[in-house]
Length: 138
Image (cartoon, rainbow, N blue to C red; front, top):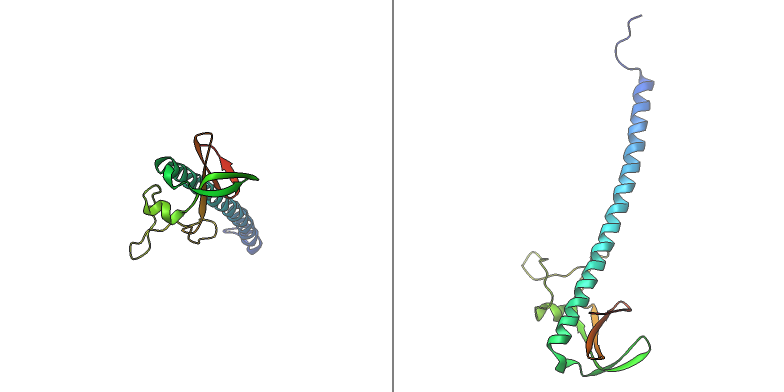
């Protein structure tokens, strides 16, 4: 008997295998995508921290508030928002909305970061910034 083509069972087996492969690759892609969004958000927070340190170093006279960082009181502090850092050109964003207004968005939640804050303080003649309960040196 001369057989040409595939049987229905063979075609179904190939389709099932393709479905399994696509499911596995889709799940891997989604994991990579979520991981990259989180890494990009961490990079944005690091950028905000550096901008806040630059702001504090350039404007030492604004560090006049009192704050508590990790249980210690500091008298040379200031809390700045991301919007304030953008407006004073210590932070730069290429993100814009449809009208051309500057945006700075959280890649994970897709919400604006304008109201996110950095706490700047001076200790031992150095400027530090805290974002999301992290203390980092300049």
